Image (cartoon, rainbow over all chains, first blue to last red; front, side, top):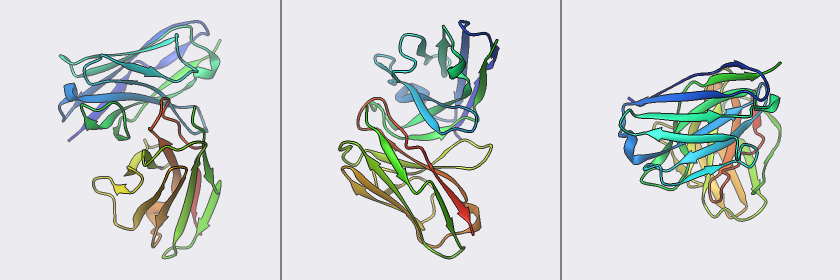
Length: 122
Length: 107
């Protein structure tokens, strides 16, 4: 069965950095695009970033462009998010999610991890 | 950026009754629209994609309709386990924006 397990969350000061990871299993990771979606405490969902199955294209929300970088290692079935210049408003649960279609350019997200909490606070 | 607007913000429905949730896009997203259900403390679950296709394992009481800018999620006969927050998301244009959510309460 599909499993997505996020790790790397924690408490960081404003301006600091953090690297999230998402370990994938139960499907052919290398043929699916992957997303990061976040949810601030008590708020709704915000799509953050997408990377194509082969890593050739990335897309970002305007709110994170230039500060967060999505990447993947298909040899290890792992998705990453490098988070730099973090702001208080980046505080959220970060979910990794699998794209619905293989070889696609970004569609709905059909499987989600349980999320990892990032808290940006001084 | 495409803005997604959901209504109502909160909906209270009795078990066995029909629930109708709406989602409007600020510009056409064709049929590139998904619906998700989220329960407290859980990750979202995909219900509908392509505007009207049910995801794997989703009961037939959930149905989606619409295209362009107007979309509807209908739960034909509400069950007690259907409570939660429902989000629509467009994936026609980057970024893939979500609506603000509709909280469905069981009356």
